Length: 414
Image (tube, rainbow, N blue to C red; front, side, top):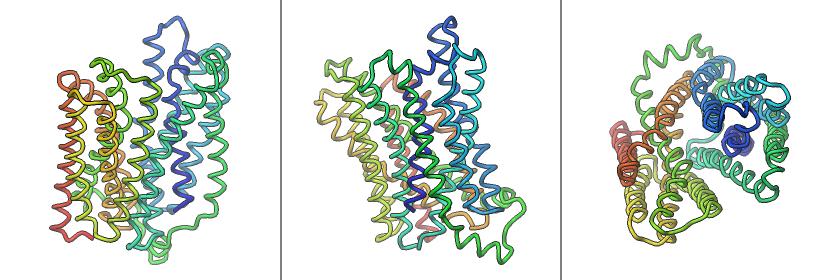
């Protein structure tokens, strides 16, 4: 569990560190005469390629994971992330190699997208098949919180580099440091993963010849409801991660400064770190409680608490409340966003073992690409009219999660 979690932390760090230095990358890897807008657009488009390619990467890696073993794909996913990240740290800029620079940058993001598509589903399946059922909630919680830890690690690295080095030094060489370190630590993680053993469930299926030639075909034929439920829970996860954790801090900064409650960028970074921490704690807490009281009861509790806390947070944000009150309710909503831990908990149990990797990876990556990709557009659109609508949207996702708990209760889900 710890080796899987460490790898997940480093892999997500490698994936998101790109966005923390997007402005620097836009200046170094694209011609200066195309203007700020197009260089920024190209940089973020290159970053988005990683998200667009992840469903394909996840589906392909899951196919071979269900056929040839979980460990093999687990090793491959981290290699596909680590090597491009290290190369990113030493990649020549546009000034040195011209248009080869953005082309290689695009290839790096493609390989990283393939890797991230297989890493998290593979990690969830791997931990699930190594863990006793009575400790599965906490084990998955540790793994899921470690993923948010990768985002936290990226923000910390960005903060340290920008505090230690001046703008000229960052632009000259310092931006490379987080990428090179990510590559080095990732290589160490690859070495540590060689000590992992194949899951006993896969070994048993291989011995009894229960492995399928085309696992995804079986998923489409006999697991349609599982795909739907998994897609709904992934929708909930994208709202909590993409909207509440990644995008919301910028909205907080803008709304507070517009309403004469001044706040600095440094304070916003610290607030974002805070909600990442409370989300991680929420994942651990939800998993711990699930192992003692069951999936349905704890999912209901976290869903209702998330609905209430997110509505209160947006109410105090859009009213004349103090920054301290806003931050407290933001962190509380982050704690109950720990209901995202039930997304993998449900998915690893709702698919049969011989198609578990394929079913989980297909459902998760397709839903994440759709709802995660639309989240920024949705926030910009509905937030422009009334920021409270974003709160209603998050509350709706909490309602979806609560509805899933009702469905699972009817199916006597453990």
